[in-house]
Image (cartoon, rainbow, N blue to C red; front, side, top):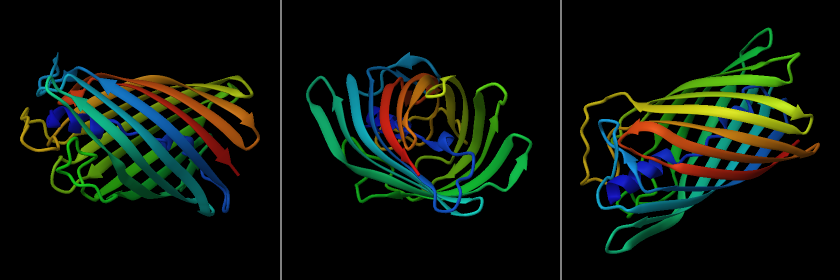
Length: 269
């Protein structure tokens, strides 16, 4: 049970990176509060086949995410993210529950190069656990501080009313699980000046692939998964936005076959 629960804990991370490949001017910012819900009753095994892991029959997680960006000086931006969650893992005998603050993330993003409509921004940051225990059942995370390195790129598709964005990153983990590569791609088109339709793809993959699964630990040593899904953004006011997202884990190894839903409200200044 703990194995599947920890897989989902690792996979259930709402990333808001795509909001700002483009720099924010000094003093301007963006704040978003989001609710997320994810569930799974199946998993991708170490060989990529669908199946079950441990005795977990059903997993559900609810989370609240806080995300913020702040322009510091020209082309330099501070990004912060934190989330709390409640998790339930059901076995044939009982339901295991856990809740609390999980991890916080702090990044510096520098938009150092613009080539025509394309903006390229390297980003460096850390993940900080917020006081939980890795031995909790189910675990809220790895309880380790990690280093994140990313390069983000975004381009306006003008005169077409849309954009394309992508990022590539590397997560240097402490202990278990293994270091990971992270890839992201997103595109969006305005159906109306106030309605933005989006689609995104995310890929996470451990640097090792031994095929081993260790079920005696709360955190799985290595994994890989791909998620895809649509999104809708509504510009409700000059300073207020609403965001809706669906996401499915479509393939992977040693990871949960999640269905996820996110809804958020944002303020821009």
